[in-house]
Amino acid sequence: MALQDIVAQTVAGLGYELVELERSAGGTLRVTIDFPWEPGAAEDKFVNVEDCERVTRQLQYTLEVEEIDYKRLEVSSPGIDRPLRGEKDFERFAGEVVDITLRAPMGAAAAGQVAANRRKFRGTLQKAAEGWEVIWSDEPPDPQPGQKRAKKKEEPTLHALGFTLDEVKDARLAPIVDFKGRRRAGVQE
Image (cartoon, rainbow, N blue to C red; front, side, top):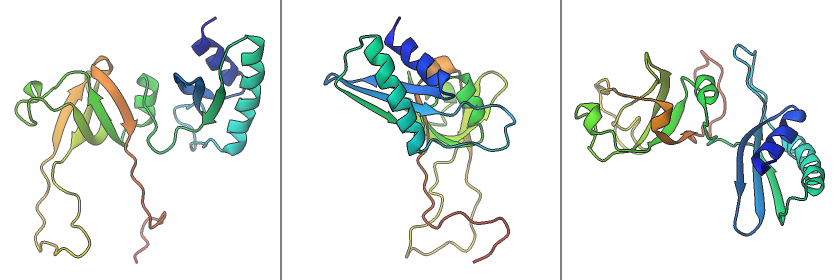
């Protein structure tokens, strides 16, 4: 049985899903886990240290039984820049800001909206009629601290680029952090 199958089966048996498996040249085995997503679920659960410890213990036992050679095992959560691997991940994170890298430049197909050799895009992921699309604006979101704000703010020009999963080389959630913390809707500061 292949290493990918062994790890995926073990992780699934504990109630998690395998997000990513990486084996380095130095013998390190990196396993990234998450809770399975169910459409319409009330809220997402997040992987914590106890979950990683539980999976680590079971994988150590399983890899020893299967006689898989490795020097170090690392089990972690996907983090804020979680990779998107399949259709289910794209459905789960529709409406979120993502970083997409395409296999081939799409500038020519974008009707002059972008440079002809551009392959990387950051924008909001949405389901399209055929496949997916990312919607973005090339204008900066807000001025930097200390800069003057324009009195009249024009609406930014939005661009959309459609793609299929076959055209995607890498897709991840954009690592956007709000250091001011979570705010309730309608609360003014």
